Length: 235
Image (cartoon, rainbow, N blue to C red; front, side, top):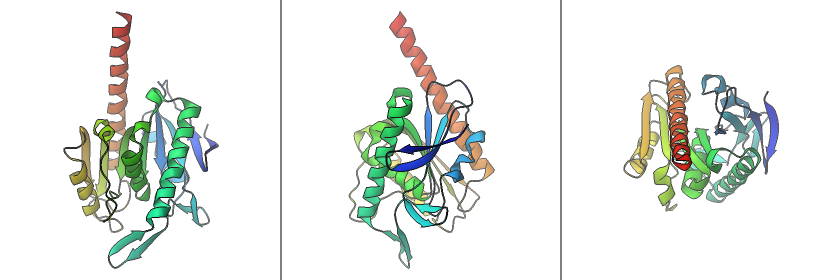
């Protein structure tokens, strides 16, 4: 049964796994103007071995509407305050550490799935604290490469698997945002899956199917590697 939990300064909904599990956790980060109930609706379509923790962003916009940091739509695109984005990243990092401490996931790391602004937060986490991640799912988002940010991929990112999904008809964050993310990641990470679907700013059934397949493949690989290690240790 899903329960509301507090993780450092962030609140969220914790949905235990439906099947036997080795402790894998999928942390969900909703988009700007949504809330922690949004992405949790996807859980029944995902691998039952996953514990899903859907976090609420810290910035209250309106009733049941939250954001990770303030944004403004300008003629030159979306603008935001870097200091507030950095604070949101720190709040998320603290929450992830609290989740890991409480639930003790496999290898002490979590899977991170973000939609729209939540995808930006997923990228920022991978760039600054990759050691807490098993992998990243960036859905309908953008890579945080604004001029002057000087973001470099740390070496640890190279070992993380990435799934990047975007809609061809996205009129909020056009698909070029995902294509730029692919350019930043290609050749720098060892496991990148990139998909475009005929959809807008959302998650279609085909996209959800790909998310489910990708996660199951990753969990199977983790379990196979764990089984190999155990066999070697017992030999």
